[in-house]
Length: 79
Image 1: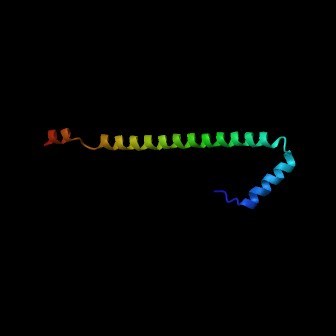
Image 2: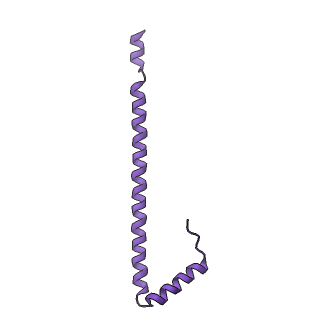
């Protein structure tokens, strides 16, 4: 996913500290954490809905296949 090493992370923190200052950095980190958590929840919800749609499509396909195949009772009546 993201290949960020320690040096890159330390550089981002240092630049952020210089830009925001030590007073506003905790609030900014908290806000960023909330946004990241919200994004993760949205992705998880999307994945669940996608999985449900796939399962529903597979179930409909199976039901269609079963309705098209002759049942055991129909084959006995025909003989």
